[in-house]
Image 1 (tube, rainbow, N blue to C red):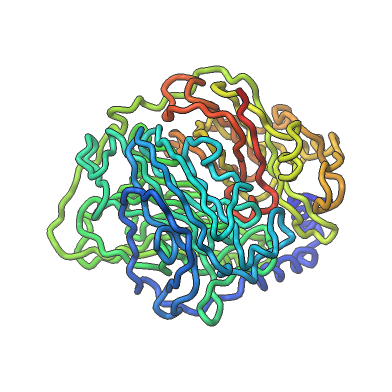
Image 2: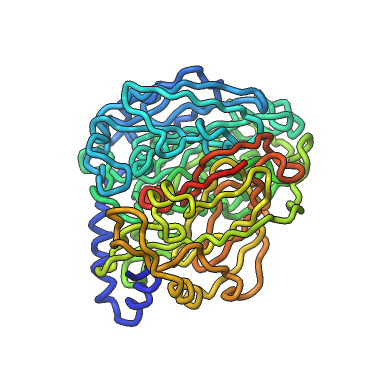
Length: 577
């Protein structure tokens, strides 16, 4: 079995004949959507509300564009697509009973029973479970991928909200079907407020909170069939890129804005697509928060990179814009990120250069001051000084068959069901300790890695000699797979645990970018790179943590590119007493 890097290296040496069949297969997968007008749909805005005690998960009829008509989608809390934006106050717990009222899957033709956990019954009797992404939550409420429940059943989620203000989001997390269920509509935003960012605004920072100037933006990419219904590949593929930008459930929408300061809570809820956002007016995006809450100070950016699962809290000042100005939110990220596909095909095929438009309304300009310091009542973020009790080397790889097709995306060359049933193949940190996790990407494309339960700090990034490391890693194998019917056969090329990357590093480590130097739970891992994280596994692990709970139990870590986590780039980990 070969890795994708080895396959691409072979292709470069042998010419386009080797690579072209894979390219053509990819192009067949992505049939063009009907032509749609841009910036003619009004952006739906899900202003924050208090969470209810009960939450229905149910089908509805939704139109992504006036040219497409209405088709069956899924939503939370009475919405036909996506879910309400909930806001809570730090330290005030909520209890939500969610009811599965789903029917036949809107993407029934794409339910792939070859994926782990997926059954034919998921077509008409689909499972669901909710993960509150970014939450420091007890294991029974975390949305473990096998804690699903069927139509007619319900589940209770207890969220204690004992953490700093931040931009969280909730979404389906069903084993083997996260991509399909989220594409069908099961996602929404969840904002935690505190003294620095209170409900209703009037906080010490002077930034918007709630209507009308705080606007959630859920970014996705979709494809549509000729009849206007959603399109998705019938069989699993390692990535999915739609050709229509969808924001808050509308295709290429427009938002009319006043000439003042706006706050946008942005989540990349796409399957595989990275967004590198910029404004056509060339004005700056002012990032004030990342996944886990406020940064120490605003970061002024010409471009903002967001991988799948990442969030950003961003200010845009329209006070200097003129009435009638039309400002486009643009995207110049290649797909796959960061370099796109091989040069033998059209590099523009998977690009999505425009996302939405802002139209500046008439009226007097109302400028607002940008705060200099963002943490008034919360401690400034400083590097965790507590020495890690251990380091873990964690490898991102895949398994190909003899036809160079990807059979499974993998972490540590371990399958989900192996780790779920064999604790010796799971990471098992102890509660209230600090560890260093080193993500090692051996692939030519970037991934976003997500840890449930706790936020982390990025220590640094460093290049790795992937060829030398891969050869040494492969020399530790093969390892016999501890499960039946594993894709690719009864062995994998590598041993467990992965090798230390230190002897194979290149160049000097680079500190995180200024807008990554906050509390994160999802991190971009670039090709042939080691990203080192400092992870506190409990509120007592070290000082000045942004959360207040220490939980033991089973959680998961995974790639947040949804097709990747569905097959098999997700593993459980245990926090031990």
